[in-house]
Length: 325
Image (cartoon, rainbow, N blue to C red):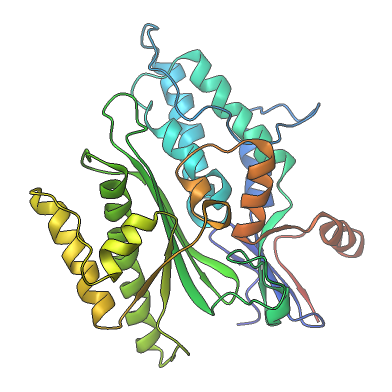
């Protein structure tokens, strides 16, 4: 069958000499931008979006505008889910306006595609060398992230229309981002701790899905997997024997008690990490440029523009899939 070079619009680039693999969607970005006439000249934006939320449109509905917007946001969803977690939060914001977008919404999503065009050489990197991992949990030069870990975060009551909270999680295996999600919670919470707890429960459920997958392929982890959370009260509630969130809200109690059960049974760990080391932070809010650059690093996205340039010189423009022996 040969080596895998392209899968569902994702190009796979391997280099055996350095024991690395890159997953990149630059060709898909080019095709979308060409299809919708995204401007390719001038300076591209440094961040995909500058606002946490966009106001609802007061313009008269326009079928053509709505169709265009839905196509742009639908294509963005594909990018955000499969290979570019840096725009996952941006997609959540745009998805709130699918039924009646205004012209400003169309302009904003086109700007996001210009950001993607300017950063199309960003790729998810998998390395067989542990020292090449993008460490994100500690500044200690001797520290190494665990083989498999997750991070969970929430932004309390930030959705202006419903006051629901944003939430997100990421999972890494061997330094490679293997799973991420950015979404809005389905229920309104009454405190930051409640919103963090619901986000943590979602991440814990997903972690146990991964643990079942690992068991199915006979992969044994070297330690109990950890989910990192940047809210100390939430961590205490699910890990300390005498801490408890005092609430009469049934669904919150259920999430709290279930996580405590899993921690007590040593199936998962929950630990605190400061916000500036939280990889899921950029999945719950729009970040300014400096923090966004750090978010990119924490996600393990690397710029392989020079490598792509060399490959084009060696192989012409046909880079649908490249394997370097």
